[in-house]
Length: 275
Ligand SMILES: Cc1cc2nc3c(=O)[nH]c(=O)nc-3n(C[C@H](O)[C@H](O)[C@H](O)COP(=O)(O)O)c2cc1C
Image (cartoon, rainbow, N blue to C red; front, side, top):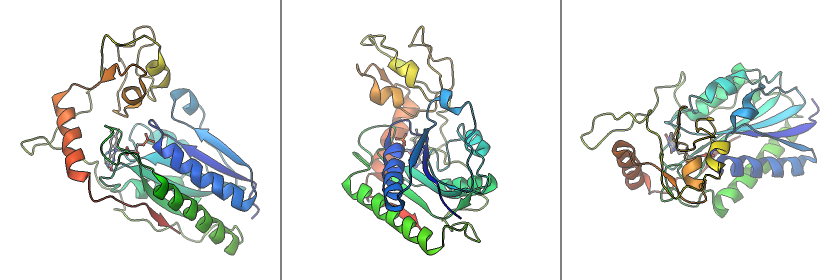
């Protein structure tokens, strides 16, 4: 089979998944002398039409890990992707706690959608909830591993004559996948932060950045302090507000953020690549 295009497809609310997927895709395209196309499906407007490929495509598809799985509100869009025999590399990016069953879920979803998975990886990115857990990642070491992974994929493809492998790439995780990770509060009981939303301070300059970049389209454009839609706690608005005017005040959410930061700060988790 002849490959025509390398595709980098990703959801990336705070940019870490994008950096990893792009780095791997750029090096792979270079190594194979193939054109690279990007599908950034972070914003709702980019998810109007399902992704669709052909047997001449190699697709690197990346999502962050939310609660140990592919973000649940994003899953229907990933499920809708049509591989039509394309080769694929599922990539998950997580915030130094764990990726649990996310890579298994992404691999299975791609296989079910008509992709042939030939490699897979889990990388680490700064945790969405703050700047302290997995701070600054992916860093130079992560990106060097991403480039190494690209070389490994290129070598494997050339050795196999670009043919689809007989079986899906083997990845860790429960199959079928297990339940979503549920955070616990100070008393050890489960806490539910699904309805929690950020607040907006008087420092807000009404620049509309948050409304225009919310991956769920949840923030009112007319009145950006209103969030009528579903907040997934991706922190795109919190981390990128030019005035620092959006933040969380919910005690359960803040407890969970500080708890995982303390618990999972170390050891540093390293990327794992499967070829
Ligand atoms: C709601 C939510 C749940 C998350 N769950 C996990 C998790 O289970 N394990 C983990 O290590 N990181 C978790 N993270 C952190 C993200 O996976 C990580 O920060 C990732 O790099 C974010 O990707 P992005 O920058 O492309 O948005 C979670 C983040 C959010 C917003």
